[in-house]
Length: 194
Image (cartoon, helix red, strand yellow):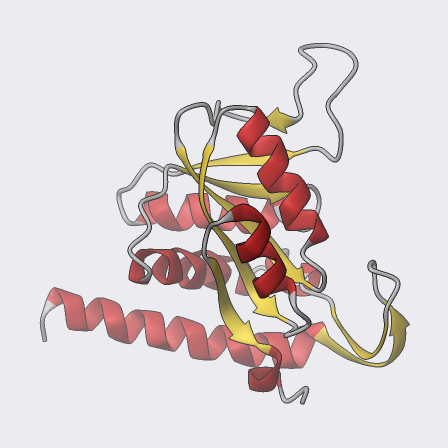
């Protein structure tokens, strides 16, 4: 086997195991009100995945591989606190495991009025290629807030990437409003949520 085929096999195995864990741990059935205010028959609680001892590493591997497969060069990865925080950290660690330098960052909902007055925390994103991350997206609001904050901080947003797309129009809205591709590792159909 070649190095490339070994890497592809490892990525496929990571993706399959992550999907199993999402179905087992993160999909909660029953009526819930989403952050958008919409009502749903299920909830995808991806913090049960992004903060899980096994799944977190898989999140980093799968997300980094997806970004690489899309041909996107990235120097920083992060998004709106709190859903994106562990996703950015997972991508940073996966990149380090692969011998690459990808910094993580956190975007506050609003700029601080004290201290350094920053909205984007962590290593500077100024002049760097940035992927805005989210665990899942319904309306795209969190990702759009993060994109705006990163752009104000001088970052070059090259994509928005989420673990699970709920197929509720976030992709179309984000791509139209940001002009960058929207990537997702899993669609709700893969979770058996049609």
